[in-house]
Image (cartoon, rainbow, N blue to C red; front, side, top):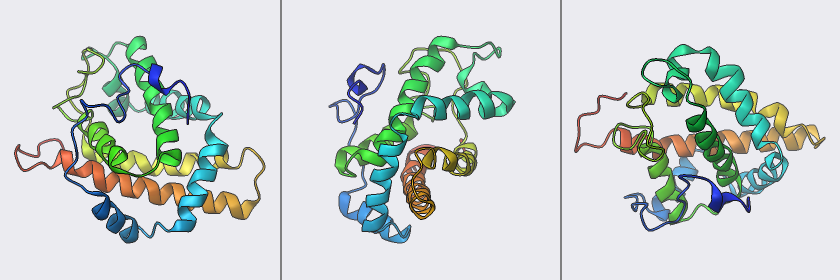
Length: 203
């Protein structure tokens, strides 16, 4: 794992202030079956993490600066309500974005991991967005945009998986494992967005 993870502002993996998810490890195991995520996928996801470990900065820069920045309805979520850039906010959230790539690939998918998926989702809803970094920005990221943008991430990550010269079949297997891992995370992220205790207005 990234040895500097503890120094990332707002990164609170496995801390006591991260609420426990209602999803158990047994239920996560069922989700993995539903997504077709196998033991082989787990091995190739770990390999993907090793391949991506020295590329996370470039990858997040690609997503944020070359894609999101050019899409106004996505870019606004890291800017002020007036549309002004927020460099400090971007720097902190980009560091967490980079760590998320490593957490997806290299962390054990245990209860701490499940709990942090809930935390990630909450930080995109009006319940927690902007609070961690104490910034002024959009009140939430619509779930529809979160779901849609994962398709872009899945497509654009493939050249990075191939960047170290792994055989083509390994690249395909790493890519398949990554896509399934994102599908599992989407299933976990939807819960906080559709919590019945509040109206689901953030779709």
